[in-house]
Length: 80
Length: 412
Image (cartoon, rainbow over all chains, first blue to last red; front, side, top):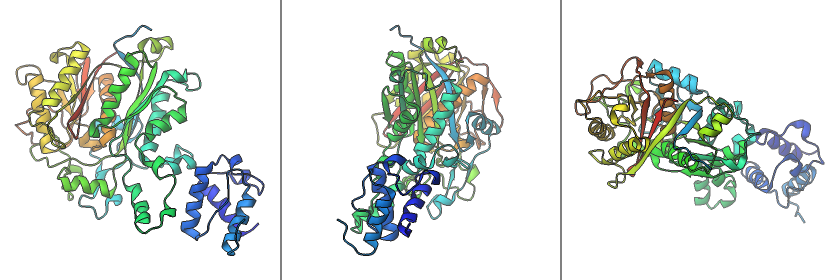
């Protein structure tokens, strides 16, 4: 997967104590026990540290979907 | 439900600058060594020393997600609560959650956490404000996170009476048990005020000792050379229980909480009433509540901050109640001389230390009490722990705004 995917999984591990064994592209945030407030926190961290917007990602989104959104944001694409 | 007036203390938990756990704290108090030292967190502040909890390392006790969403005062409360619940021999999976309450006193709560977020807002970067900021910093989160972690679904409160908060929380908890509302209440106080803004505020008020050249000698309760208090941090938690409930599960009762006295000076927003009017009322109320006379009290765990005004007002109140010098005066000590002042945590930490004194029949010394202030005129324990035969002891706590709480414990 992309750098964006790595970025997200790193934060999940470092900040949210998610074990790497639990993380796959198809895992949803929900399944990892993260809720909308946690996602809002991740969005703030990504915005401050990398200037990236995590728009349109919900607790039911998979990590792959979130990484795609970040890649779109990074490439200046317009998310749907 | 039959109610009993007394409340059993069946568990203690402490996180203090003398160490993590009741045993480490008791040992540190017995040694009488002040824990005050220059603190890197206060570099540049007008007073740059404090009493810090050594090597707290929240990740040792709590998972990283919980650490990330909580402030230090919540983390220390959780660790103290765990020890108290274990010490009481309670298994949260087996208790009736609706009958268990949590009351934790907090004074300032988190203060420094807000700074970067306020700067973001000032710069128009509102989208950088953490959604965790409010839930991380509001003072009620100590009690809330304890309830969440241990599954306590009865009443949950944060009591905020400044430096008396930890003791006031125990007063509220006692009433929940005595009234039959709860079988068990996890009660105490917590504070993590060793941050530049809080230290600076207290320094600007003139409340902190300025002995930056001698931090260990800075807190001098009831000493003629005292010049202010020393910031501390930590948490104290007691498990209070209906005596019949404790008997039913054959719990070890460490002490009985038989009297509480809460009062207000109704005088000034920071200074105590110069004659200790509110303090005296709280002590007399606690004695009456327990049905005891002043002569029954063998030990007073004083508020004893080491400020000129507090110590004099407290001493005057105690001298009137105990008719010093005509009666046999109680042995007085101030744990703050060793642990510093943990604000909302202090009253609960000192309540736990008072229970330990009753259990051990020993009063730990007041550090730095070298030239007794003749105007105070109390029997202060100095230099070494003093064995005292006693069946009852008081713990005093007085907060800014003149809000006072006195707890009276008796041997089981």
